[in-house]
Image 1 (tube, rainbow, N blue to C red):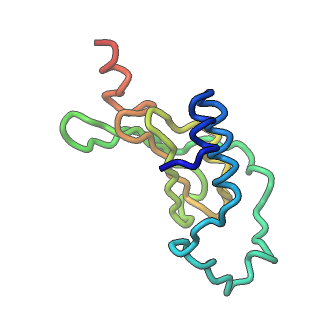
Image 2: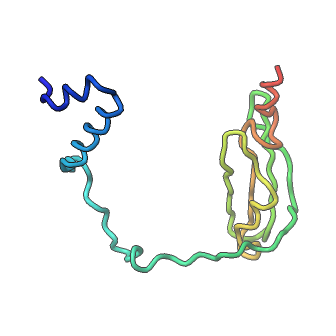
Image 3: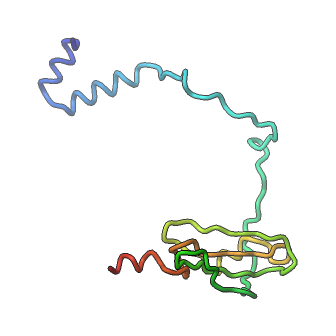
Length: 136
């Protein structure tokens, strides 16, 4: 059974009822029994965060590109840039429906990395493109 004050408010408007219910909920403490404890900061990253480069690397051109067949009539577009003998670095773009751009190469040091970027299945220059399915 609802208290008399809430019953009276219920008869007026639902907006007022919402206000009373919200005020009551705010006055009670949250049940934190199921909230996990803070994670360890053994690396002291909270007070001493890692410093990352703030500028992108210069624009570079790909020295290799092509289509990689992955079966069922699908091919992924890729391009390779940077140091051909460098540490391989694969860049995955967001999605769905996104794609790579020359800007993607600029996140990595081209003197150190062999940068491989590719369009995921159905995205960008990969074939068939998912957008072609929408054209009907």
